[in-house]
Amino acid sequence: MKKLLLPLFLSLLISCEKEPLHTDPESKNVFSISSSEKGKTYQIRVYLPADYLQSSDYYPTIYVLDADENEKFVANECKKASESLHTQNAIVIGINYGDNRDVDYTPTVTDYGKGGSEAFMKFIKNELIPRIENDYRADKQRKSRTILGHSFGGLLGAYAFTKFNEVFGNYLLLSPSLFYDHSVVLQYEQQSRPAIKDNDQLVYIGAGSTEDGLLPANDLLYQRLQTYYLHTKSIFNVIAGRGHQSSKNFDIEDAIHFYFSNK
Amino acid sequence: MKKIITSIVITTLSITCFAQNKVPTEKHLPYRLTTEPAIGTRLSTAMGAMDIQLTNLLQYNISRRVGLISHTAVSHTFPNSRITDVKQNYSYSIMQKFGIGTSLYSKHNIHTFSFLAGVRYNAYSGTLNNDQLPEHITTKAQSTTSDYGLMYNWKKIRNKYFLSFRLYVPLKDGLAGITENATIELGVGIKLK
Image 1: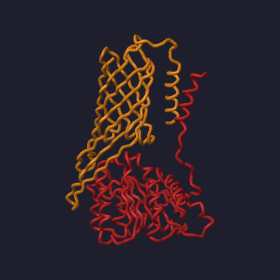
Image 2: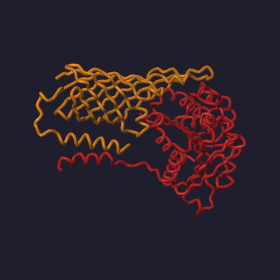
Image 3: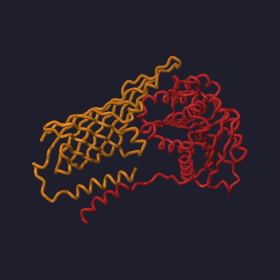
Image 4: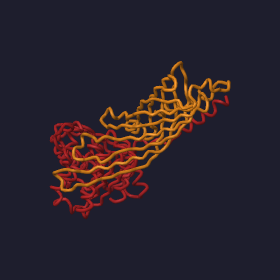
């Protein structure tokens, strides 16, 4: 019996670790929206702040890409950040796939993507956002709208920054694949810069330190923001020792905290 | 995943605690001290993230069942072929871990299960060269972080020299960490004592 005590004790020590928070945030609405722009149907999940029903306030919004993977974690991090910083929470809108992500999240046609970002952004701008702002007390100002995406989702967020800058005032770009198609989004940025550089906005760029070849394009975008965008608050956050997937949740946490600290 | 890891730990530690009552002597111990150089790669190489590792495992068996382990690795990561406008100047990692393991024996095989912990140093430099962009910047990143996990080591016993196969499963960062950093190694072990 004594011989069993040590291994049992050690196994308990190893299995006792803090579980990540997976509980659903308090209030969640689900609806589907058929896009005339895209000819596809998207399922949307809306996470409302805890005080939404007791309040008559209007709330900022965060639109989350790859929603199945990320929306709950984002909503939980928003709740934690808003409470710790004593600031108003946001409505979190998860946009699930109506088409493949290599269609909606890529701006041009290559071996890895089908170049449907423009149509997808038009759907978000002309159909989804008006629906959200009609059905919920969502603040309609540009500065109160945020887009959050990881990998190809981050690429779409950067594309929105360059080509649809009037839609969102805040961009949370997590390991964005800016290398896509010979860094085409950085070329778009050059073209759009005169029109967008004086806008007020927040831009968070995050990546894992072991993401290697993904880093230089993101570093360049950050340097351009620092050099040319005098009314933009930006940060390039490198998560030490982590890669493309293992950095994601740490990045979401830091991005949400950056947003709530600076909105 | 945690239940599987916990079961492995319970099993290996129970085997250790239920060792033979007979005091182990050297003639029951095939190897007291071994060095096992090997070549390895991350399992994610199969998905395009290619690297090559030179590794060495030192194992000192304090008894037939229990061994102390040192594992050293140096790796080079190849550039990602999807990224066409970045010239990689260098990308390498240096890893050092120490740990403890327990061994099971069959006629010509030794199976060692161990827990290792240590540090990992990563360094990268890449230069963006794109004709469409006026800037040419060089980006560097480096980090020193903890590294811990479970290793399975299979030794195919011959005499002084033996085949050594290893599988390392990191416990940090859950499934994402395993996908990015689990490794396999194959080499030749040498009995030193």
